[in-house]
Amino acid sequence: MSGLDLAPIRVNCKAMSIEPPSPITAFERPAEQVAFHRTELSLILSLYGRMVAAGEWRDYGISHLKEVAVFSVFRRTAEIPLYRIEKRPKLRNRQGMYAVVGTGGQVLRRGHDLKAVLRVLERKLIRAVD
Image 1 (cartoon, one colour):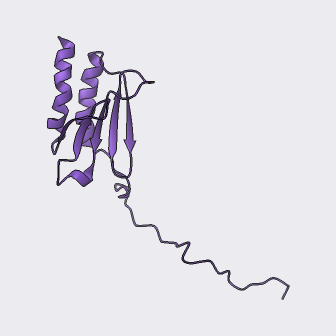
Image 2: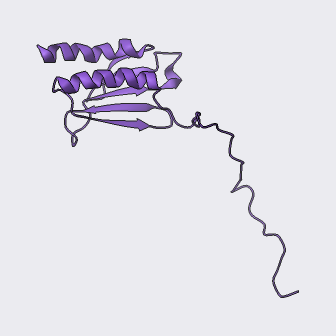
Image 3: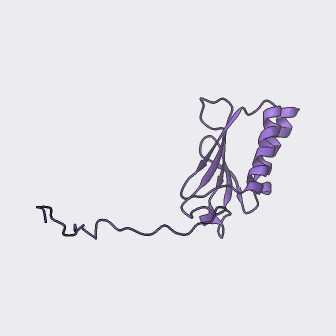
């Protein structure tokens, strides 16, 4: 044979491990990311549409992170969010996994039912229309 070394290359097994990908169907998402469900987004976007029609909100952003999903609402695109609607599944058995957080970081409402939590923002819609 030629001068090539055909011995297997050894890799430090402690530093690197190779795991086969977990079987995921087309409709499942890996557990490493929290996201809003279609019904949750429907409730949020319904409120968002009413607030846009009232001229209060103009833009939104959605973030799906490891422990929280956030729907941020903006008056203008370049500003900080007016409100953040958060979903934290780890708080499901404690205070509730849904929360509405204001500009300064204060929690305006927290609970287990998204519709009930969003009522705190609907009160602002009633004042905006009057």
